[in-house]
Image (tube, rainbow, N blue to C red; front, top):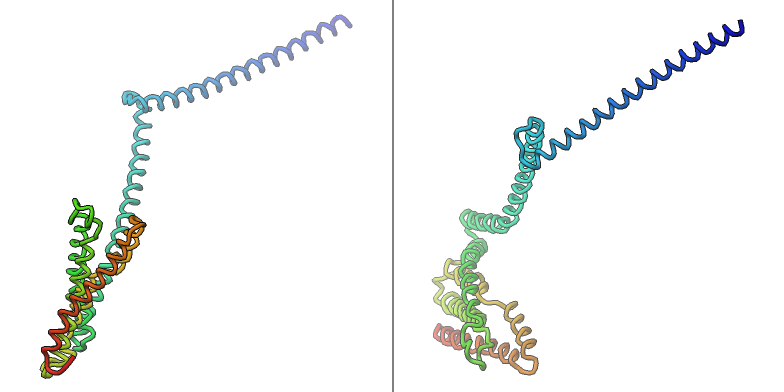
Length: 265
C-alpha cells in the first residue's frame, strides 16, 4: 500500500507540475504576442513618421498621416490668417482714428456754422482747412536743412529750412494781423468783426501760419548746435538771429499797412 501511495503521489505531483508548466508557457506566449504587437505598432508609427518626412505617398498609412498633418496645417494657417486680419484691422483703426476724429469735427463745425451762423464755428473749420497746406509747406522746407551752402564751412551749419519756415510763418501772421487792423478795426465799418473776411484772416493766421512756423524744432536745433559746437556761439547766433529777423521783417510789414489806414496806430 505504501508503495502504491507513493507512486500515486508522484503521479499526481507530476500532473500538477505539468499543468503549471503548460500554464506558464501559455502566459509566456501571450506575453510574447503582446510584446510583438506593441513592437509592430511602434514600427508602424515610426514607418508612418518616416514616410511623411521622406514624402513617400505610396504607403496608405503615410497618406492618412499626411492628410491629418495637412488638416492640422490648414487649421494652423487659418488661425494665423485670422490673427493677421485682426492685427491689420486694429492697426487700421489706430492709424485712421485721428483722421476720423478730425473729419468728424470738421463736418460738425461746418454743419454748426450752416445752421447757427456763428463766427466761432466758421473760424474752426476754416482753420482746419488751412492747416494741412501750412504743415506740408513746413515739411517741404525742412528738406532744405543741410543742403544750402553745404560746401561752405562758414554757413553750412545753419538750418535754412527751419529758418525760412519761421520767417514765412511770421510774415504771414503779421500780414493777417495788419490787414485785420487796417480793414476791420480802422476801416469804414463795411467789414464786421464776425464777417467772412475777418474770420478768414484769423483762420489763416492760426491755421496756415501756425502750422508753417515751428517752435519745438527751433529750440531743438539750438540745443543740437550748442552740443555740436560747444566752443562756439553759433547756437546763440541762430536763435537771436531768427528772432530779430522775424521781428524786423514783421515790423516793416505791419507798420506801413496800419499807418496807411484812417487814424493812428
